[in-house]
Image (cartoon, rainbow, N blue to C red; front, side, top):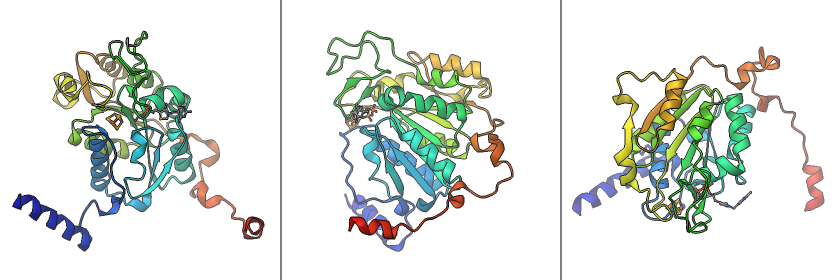
Length: 306
Ligand SMILES: Cc1ncc(C[n+]2csc(CCOP(=O)(O)OP(=O)(O)O)c2C)c(N)n1
Ligand code: SF4
C-alpha cells in the first residue's frame, strides 16, 4: 500500500516537473470502456510507441472512427479528428497528403473497416498512403452492443444473431495481402510490449502500415477471451526461417488463424514507392500542399452570421 502511494507521489511530481514521458499525451477525460476491454492496452501501447519514437503531440494527427475504439479520441492529448463511421482512413489519408510532415495514425474497428469503410481500406492499400492504420479487430460491432461483423466467427452467438451467423468470417489480413501492400503486421491487445513494437515499426515504415490488433471484448465476445488467444499466439521472432519479404509465406500465415495466430511483421516491402513519390506532378516540388494553399480573408463574409 505504502509502495503504491509512493509511486503515485513520484508520478505526480514528474508530471508537475514536466519530466513524465506521458505528459504530452495526457487528457483530463475519464476512460469509459468496460472492465477488461482490450482498448485500454491499445491506448497504453500507442502512447508508449509515440514516446519511444519521440513524436511530439504537436506533430501528430490521430484520426478516429465511430465505435468503442473511437471513444479513445478525447482520451489522448494531441490533434485528433473523430469522423464518421468508416471514414477514419480517408480522413487520415487527406491529412497526410496535405501535410506530409505530420505523423498520421488512423484507427477503426472491424465493423467500420470491413463494411462501412472497406472501399477506403482497399484504395489506401493500393495507393500506399504514408499512414499507420490500427485495425481494432474484436470480431464484432461493440458500440452498438454486440452485432455480428464481417469477422464474427460462425459459432459466436451475438445479441442480434442468437443462433450465430451463417457466413464464414472474412480474413482482413489475407484481403490486404492480396492488394500488394507494403506493410502488414498482426498483434494482440493482451501483449502491450508486442503492440508497442508493431506500432513503432509501422511509424518507421514509409507507406501504408496495416496493423491488425486482435482485440478482446469481454462484454460481447465471451468465448474468445484473452486465454483463447494466449493458447494460439506464436511470434515471428521465434521462427528461424520466416521471411517477411515473401508475400506467399505471409498469405499462408494469415490463413492459419484458428490454430496458430502468428504475431509480428508478416510482410514488408521497403522498396515500394509511396503515393506522393509516385505522382509525376509532385516530383520536383519541395513544399507541402498545405503550404501551397492560398489564404483568403473571410472575416467580412462571416459578419453576416454575427
Ligand atoms: C454509417 C453508419 N452506420 C452505422 C452506424 C451505427 N454504429 C455506430 S458505432 C457502430 C459499431 C461500431 O463497430 P466497430 O466499427 O467494429 O467498432 P467497435 O465499437 O467494435 O470498436 C455502428 C454500427 C453509424 N454511426 N454510421
Ligand atoms: S463493448 Fe467490448 S469493445 Fe466496447 S468497451 Fe465494452 S469490452 Fe470494449
